[in-house]
Image (cartoon, rainbow, N blue to C red; front, side, top):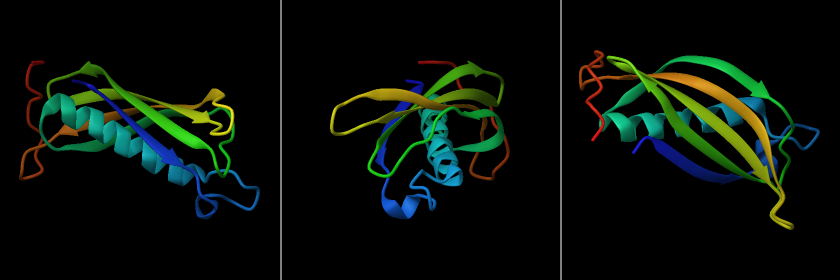
Length: 122
């Protein structure tokens, strides 16, 4: 399995003075989702090597549900590229919107922190 999904809710403490989610908080949520997808694929510990192309398309507000969908796009010898999509959902009416996208390069590491080969897909 090379996908991970998570659901968050935006609380007032997660927002700025305008009531929208802090970008740094969202980036941390995205990094966690990328970690989960990469770890599922590698069946071992993964670390973030690089973050590319985060595009904040529209704001996410206090009270919104936030669904993060992370998928492994490609696998190298020790690394994987994980695409993360972020959708906001209005819990009152169920409307959804793609808000943010990003790409994370994750590296599979051993217990010593040294990169190790990503095993073949099961």
